[in-house]
Length: 164
Image 1 (tube, helix red, strand yellow):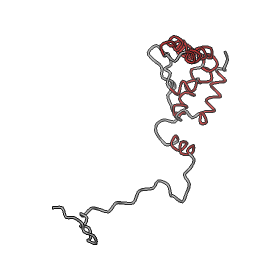
Image 2 (cartoon, helix red, strand yellow):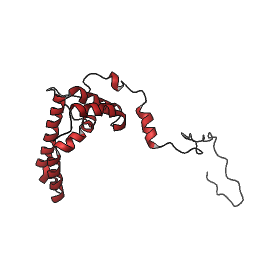
Image 3 (cartoon, one colour):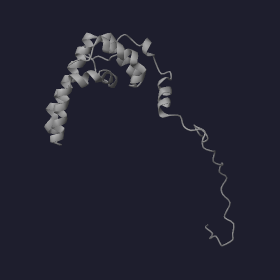
Image 4 (cartoon, helix red, strand yellow):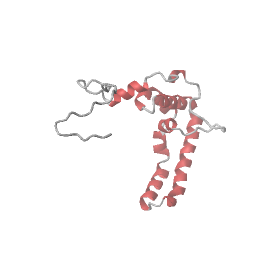
């Protein structure tokens, strides 16, 4: 039965519940948080599989016909080459999108960009497979952080120079 509280009366006793525990703090309030970059670096160095040096010889994923599959690490590794070799196709696509917001109007231009990137990846994979595999594997391992893969990038760009 409910009872109305009258002024000055004590509230009914609370049921026997455990007292709430204090919140767990990951960082002390007296110390500032470390920069996000150092948190990312620590996360990328945590043991979670093979290191780039111990990865298989062909770390770039390929399909049944031997064509490289454009994963994010492969695309990031080839990004400079894509920017140079596929610039006309990319510009035509962007100009089309700028002129007409209807997505259907630019499908063919988008296919041309995709075709250009696939052909470029195929060429790179034929000309310098070891360097491309090492660079893409490093990018995969370090979650696409260029800073950790400069040695592999230099070897890749030395074996497959960026040119039109």
